[in-house]
Length: 386
Image (cartoon, rainbow, N blue to C red; front, top):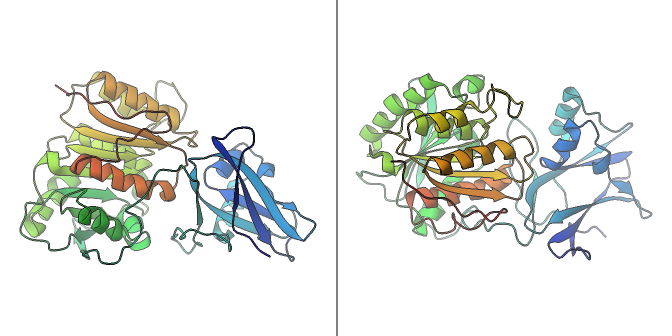
């Protein structure tokens, strides 16, 4: 009989769980488990062996992970014929193109784009609550309408009962992922209906095309376009506020870097930055090299900006964790209003979709939930930029 992921207490440490994944496929020669960011770390190290399932006497395949009880992550399984997949980039892309969700998972799956299969989601008992993610019955529905602004696709989510305004405004980068794939409108409707944020005009800016590396790399022209073209347009068309204190820019990865940069470059338009797993190593991935962490150095040396920040990063993000902590320390030292959280997960929309709602609630609403202790016990540092 097939079973969903089996979660058991670690007999040596109650803070951990032993999570067993199972799969049945008599036609394959092996099964690779892809636990988001965790498997990828070993792939970068050139060894996928720790993630190969073992064949059991009953013909099934299984693998057991030891994970902290607050871990959340998306995962997939990749049955293969012949030799195990290699770790070179072409091999890994082939794996990602063909990996599938666990057929015996128990949580709603995480949709994917570019023709790839959805992922299963594993949320252990102490993972941060995500009360706003799933569509709820009985919640007043907003509407999302497509537009083109300055030659760029922008989908606008208007809250239920949208009126003249002025309304708070949120600019969400990688909008095609959030809107078309992840249905973030449901999250926005839920967080509004619960009173965690006021009715907000949300601008889902499409940035996942070939120009993404240029747009989302501390590009002053891109940030100025958002500040000088997009926000005035939203004010005219939808009653979006021009008050920077009620304006949020949010992004993940390179988008998280760009959100923080927007508050640095144009704080008179972007008074709040929501950064999730920000690529603050940019432009040099070598830690502590004089060319790395350019934006953090600007915050350290420049005059303080009148901006607030919500920054979160995953404990499994070995390529980003140290750099996000550096930014945290600089913002605290410079007296910025900062909420900082570390979640026990990876570079993963399964984590980001909950953090996005928490960040918006913190920056636009009462902030309940966003300031709860992170994995390192951090609740936030609050000061005045002066």
